[in-house]
Structure formats: structure tokens, C-alpha cells
Length: 193
Image (cartoon, rainbow, N blue to C red; front, side):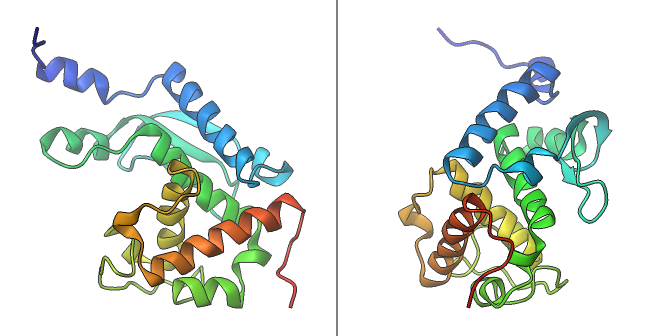
């Protein structure tokens, strides 16, 4: 039996509730812990459900560090008109990538990061999207977004690089994320050597 999908039911699916946020947040925190990223600095970052926003979510980098997820998001509403759907868990994974960079700056202001991502983390350098180098078009907008998008997929796929994005450049970024998890797990604040 087919169920009709009305605009009203579609709109309901695009409004984030407190319960949905808590469920997705618990899932993402388990993933962060499983891969070594969950530590005291990251745990200190608050996540808030806010009434309205233009983006799927945001992280106040260099400020309070908090993550904001709008109940009603213009980006999520645009998904109704043919854009690819972005899950709440993916948004939280991405924003926790930014929060990790914010709370562990010594590991991000490094030769290792520049080597993997092609520029300094805080660089405003935008690249032309190329699937050989970027996991998404949004990843090409800056090195920090490149990291957050790669980090999101790393958590989403349990640390296993999907064959469809397995290129030499993306493998180097994946390796950075993997090494980052080990460094955070043992409490390292900077890379050695």
C-alpha cells in the first residue's frame, strides 16, 4: 500500500524537534567516542536547538564553541525542492568536526593538516570542486569545510573509506582523521615530530 506524501507531511519532516536532536546527538556522541574523539574539551561544547536559521546548523568557532541546530532551517526547507536530503546526524557530525578543530587547535595548526588538506585550517582558500580531491562540493569551499565534510563521512561510515570516494587525495585526508582520533584519545595537544 502506498502512502501519499503531502507537502504538509514533508514540512513536518523538515522541522527538528528536541527529541530528534537528542536521539541524533546520542548516536553521534557514541561514534565520536568509538573513534577516540570524545574527550573533556569536546564534551564541554553545548548543543542547542534554536528556533530558526538559514543553515542546517553552525558552530561558534573561536567564540563560545557551541553548536546551534535550528528547528526550522531554510536549508532544510530547500531540500523539499530537489536538493539532496542532509540528515540531522550528518549535520551534527559535521559541526562536531568544527568543534574538534576549535578545541584542539594545536593539532589543526600543523604541517600534517596542511599536507592532507592543501592549506592551513583557517585559510579562506576556496578550491574548484574536483571529486578526486573533495568528498563534496561544499568541501571545496575552504580547508575547514573540507575537514568537516571528510570528518562527517568518516564517522558516518565507521572509519571505513567508501570505494566511491577512494582516491589518493581523499585517502590522505582520511588518514589524517584516523591519526587525529588516536592523538585525541591519548590526550595529545600537538603532533610530535
